[in-house]
Length: 320
Ligand code: GLY
Image: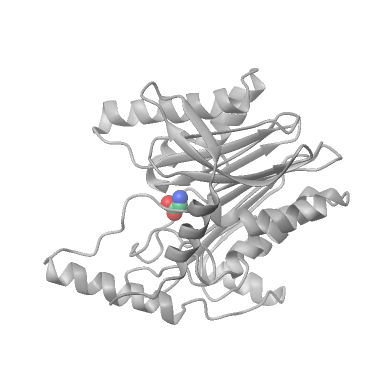
């Protein structure tokens, strides 16, 4: 059995490429890197890699994390600038004995020394979104504020050898403070993998996802015997309830998981969450998730109309 699952529809093309490698007995570590790089390289996704939206100083700062569920090797970078593929740098860092998580200047120095591709990651399109947002905020006499919720790409991958890996990549919140980091590069929060159990990954408001160490929690629940679907729902619903009890509101929390048998699950506390998945039994497919009143989440295959509209909106000119 092999498979790969990811947050959001934006992962579909990447999943197709990674799945092709898995079908040819490729390693999960290679397949997930291929899949996440495809998302990072696509300029029309505003929340990951090239074309990602900038911070309040109009600088694109990127975060990424990677975990190998066989060895528990972990690597991550935070607030890195001007490198094309953060996931590859995070994966390389996971091979180091120490210094596995590097931030900003240190991450850039490491990436340069290891000859990772350097690239100006701020696109003209992202600059247009920035100008538009600034104008809107000035007109409304508001302070710059990051919007709630965010579309990180997070993936879990299982190969025929039974290795489970997990990875994330994000540009973080649009208009964040310089140096702000969310859940995505933090093991246990943004991602977690244990080849004896499975893996999980998260997307949404990093500040709140971290409060539940939600990816670790999902894997822990699967280890206790819950299915991926049960584990995802319990982790999201418990954290959502805890946040509301203590803080009145809960930010966006969305997750996906896959266990070592290739079974998968998802959960969310928002409308509009989607995910992409492929397994030995099923070709790459995009699902739309619906949260029911009781917190149970159901999902259905996205229609061609929905998929076309998704891409039309992503690629439409920016109206300034
Ligand atoms: N979940 C991504 C972030 O908050 O940066």
